Image (cartoon, rainbow, N blue to C red; front, top):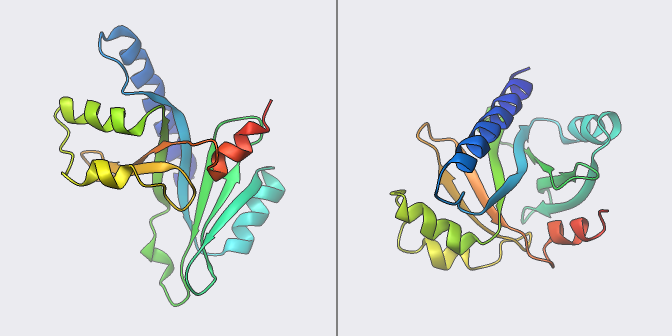
Length: 173
């Protein structure tokens, strides 16, 4: 119930933000859409059964820890540009280590331009952020995390054609 409520709040906030942005004279920093929600899970097989078997999402890739266990499992909502990331607790890690909603992510047109736009609007961007955001992440995207005033993590991602997400989206109608 908490996850559904949080997802609903995110979608409502995005809708309000888009309405406000449409009325504003400034651009929306290149945010295109909600890209994904990252969810902490205590039992990965049970979670996959639900998200794939019950909801019909499709696993697109995994990123593993050095010991080979999954660090995250990326699922695609068919016929959309939206994904769900599942973050299983590591072996020996208490399940409460990960919050139920780990973060949510916006896809942006150009991550560097978005970071410069945030800085121009007064958001504190550390000196090394631009260089860090210029290096491809493990999934092939360019990404950078920011935080809202309550400390919620927001991932800003630029999809590249050769990123895992880009390869999935190439085959979408």
